Image 1 (cartoon, rainbow, N blue to C red):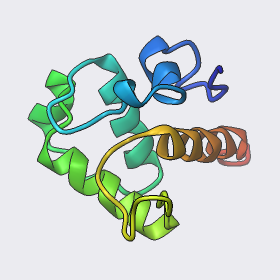
Image 2: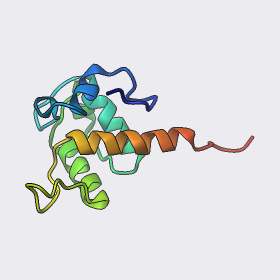
Image 3: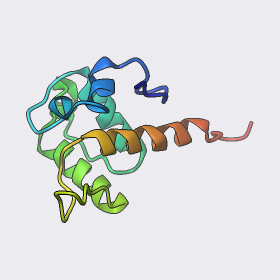
Length: 112
C-alpha cells in the first residue's frame, strides 16, 4: 500500500511500516526513513529532535518522546492490546502521519 504524502511517497521502508509489524520504527532504528518521520513530527509541531539524532537518522530518545507526544495527543492506541500510547511508529501511526502530512502539503502557504 503506497503512502501519498510528498514527504513519504516512494519510501519503501515507510510503506512496509504501513503493512508489516516487523517494519515498525522503534528506538534504535536507523536510516533515511527515520529522518522523514522526524521531519513530519517537526512540521506538525511535535518535534524537539536532537540534532545528532537527526543527522544520524537515529530513532533515539528525543524522537521517541516526540512520537509519544504525537500519539498521546491523537489518541493513537490499538485497543486490542494497549491501554495507552507507546513510542513505536507502527501501522496506525504512519498512516495518521501520512494523512496529516498530506493535509499540510495542501495548505496554501503565505498569500502573494
